[in-house]
Amino acid sequence: MIGILGGMGTQAGLDFCNKLAMLYRGKIDQEYPLFILYNKSNIPGRPESIGVQTRKFSDLPRSVKNNNKYNKVLKSLLEGCRSLEKSGCKFIVIPCNTAHYWYDDLKKKIKIPIINMPKEVFLYTKKICKKNSKIGLLATEGTLKTKIYENQFKKEYKFITPPHDLQIKSVNKTIKHVKMGNIKLAEKSIQPSIKYLIRNNCKKIILGCTELPIAIFAFKSLKNVKISKLYLDPNLILANSSMVKYRK
Image 1 (cartoon, rainbow, N blue to C red):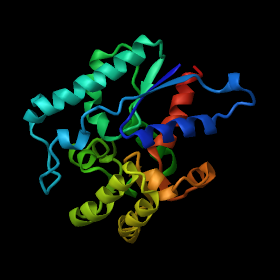
Image 2: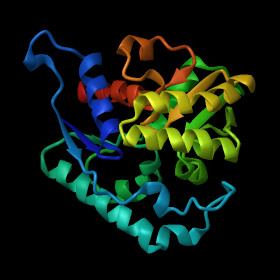
Image 3: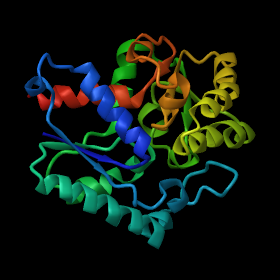
Image 4: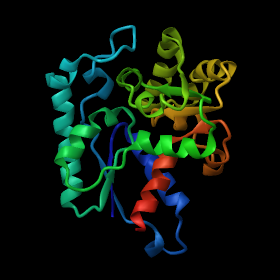
């Protein structure tokens, strides 16, 4: 059984479950994958807990992982993972990119495996993109600042992200729109950032916040997501990796 720690945000967790079910649709109920979604929406805000108020995405000081905000998020994530562990799940997935800043600490305390979303995206990218290609990243400020994607990709790819003013006016605003259910506004507000990355010759764009596929595809058919030649959807990639592990 697959354990899904969701609620970061709720729409993103449901999007993951929907992709998991649609990718591996059964002819009868009993052929669908077994999974539990824990929509733990009371986990403290991840970007706010790692201090994204600064204007530059520099390396985080060592003290960040020892502060109260970091530990409050870790405690809440651990509660969610332990609940899934006790429910008999074979492994856990977390359809939230920023939450993977806590991945190493979670892995030390949870007995069952936790699939690492950024790592799975990297492994998938290696299959379809030449080394040293330009890869665009759209993500929360927390994900950018903690470099959870950059640390995976930096040795083999060149990362391009929107400038800070575009991050605030476009990416951050889009994520907020999705969380509030304003999908049409989200679809519109993300376009300037996409155009910026395309102008900078990005071969692929990682939708590094699980709200962003919802904004860009605006609940269009899964086929649109699967055949996209530009976007890398971590939720979709994670769903495929989950099923590989589920079937072992």
